Image (cartoon, rainbow, N blue to C red; front, top):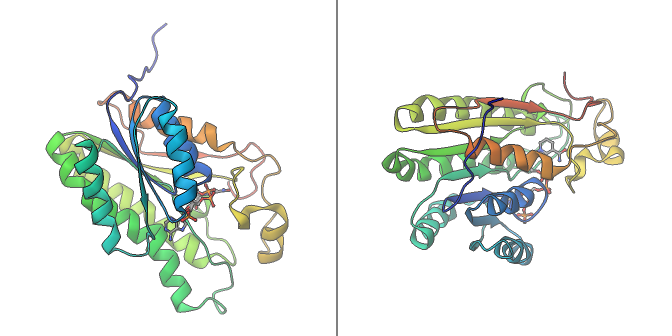
Length: 254
Ligand SMILES: NC(=O)c1ccc[n+]([C@@H]2O[C@H](COP(=O)([O-])OP(=O)(O)OC[C@H]3O[C@@H](n4cnc5c(N)ncnc54)[C@H](OP(=O)(O)O)[C@@H]3O)[C@@H](O)[C@H]2O)c1
């Protein structure tokens, strides 16, 4: 029986945002297990150093790049330092995310701006900055982590939903512009994941939203990370454009 086989990521280089915890951390480690060196982006330096140690335990190299994704000027520098260190970028995973819950009436414009800056503008700026390197190499994969909140708007999550919906358009544009150069873009919409993402905890979400409580059985981030590695390592003639992955009893989708 033949099937879709992947070829691993030996010698490749990944850039992962949100690498200090949750899905980003699991993805950085999974990329290393698949053979890639990894640049680790997030604010919490100590956590990134711990992830770097884990990456190195698989015989790969890690580059710790502490930064705030809301600060646009730090992003190009991070990409350049990655290229200077590793010489290439094959995979970009925009996994970092933030939220300021609250009703539209209560949400401050500054909070809207910050959520959009971290969740949507940073993936745009990073994609824009890695694109020339991928174009030159005529290959590359960009994976943007949305949410089921990027498929359906929720009460008390206007900025978060707007940013996650925006990632769909950004990803489709990247895929359309990238395909002539062998660059693939995929948007992934997870349901509830078992991470420290506060507002998805059963208690907090119920007090901040009138939506149903989240899935009682959340997705293990390691499983979602394995899916991301599969997308990045899939044969070059194949592109997974988008994926909705949820726990079986997810309440947020469909
Ligand atoms: N957990 C869920 O149920 C769920 C469901 C659907 C989608 N998602 C999405 O999945 C992604 C990963 O979330 P998670 O569940 O793994 O949550 P998490 O454990 O809280 O991770 C969030 C990551 O984003 C980073 N981050 C936040 N603000 C940042 C900033 N300004 N600059 C740099 N890094 C920043 C955090 O690092 P620092 O704090 O160190 O900066 C952290 O590494 C997010 O995009 C989230 O929207 C999560």
